[in-house]
Length: 304
Ligand code: BEZ
Ligand code: FE
Image (cartoon, rainbow, N blue to C red; front, top):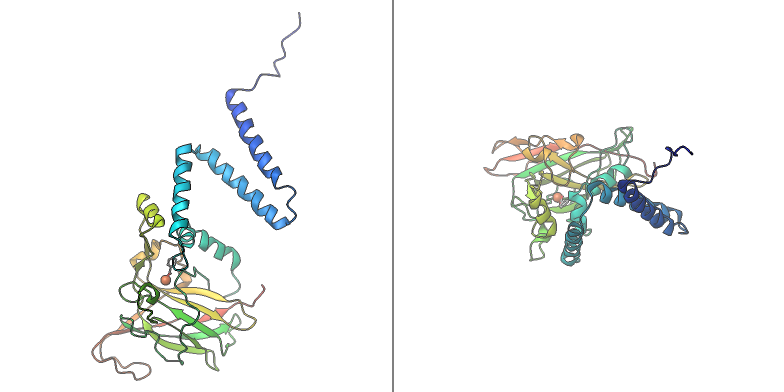
């Protein structure tokens, strides 16, 4: 009588199921095997690997997948040349911020980068150093000053500094229908690398949340609010372009910024000055309070 072979057992239902799922993954990965662009091949195969891992991890239902397709379709439908819902989606998932982290690795004391946001325009007016970016936007006047240097502290004259911000109602000029240009400008650092301008003390505002991304935030109990901030983009020859903002010390939203843009090094004191306090440039602000802040910018070399 032969002894039974105890080393070979027929697969359990779970093992059979796992084999079906893993065979599919292998087939999909293999389908990209002949891609001639090695980077594209890597991107597609890695994407497939993580997507399938997600589906298997959460045991995605067909109903949930249909809801996801409807959601992405709605994101596409609301997107046009004024509204980019895919960027918003990337922002609230932290994908924009992680891509920035990966592409702006720390270098010495270089100023940290953060999200670009959808409200930059590339033909903002030029102002002189000490000029005013508000263009009629309402809010508390705020004197902003600082230096632009390299990471060894050498001044960078002539750096182009783009600045933009929302008004005190939380809206950028481009969100109004009247073609106003307000709360934005560009200026250049002087021969010693110094810059200064009058802006507005930043106030918190919600990202556009009347579309599918807003619905997703609501469904998941998340706020659409961004911490108060002032945007900067700084460019200089042979330096890594810096896209960043500064945030306001003490803002309650610093911990909950809905696009995860806050970095400790970018939180600055905006010191309120009582009405009547002399201004740095002698400007007469009458009986309004004003604020001041300093943001020293260090640019990393390009191509590091
Ligand atoms: C902004 O800072 O302006 C912004 C950033 C991400 C999404 C929406 C707005
Ligand atoms: Fe913003």
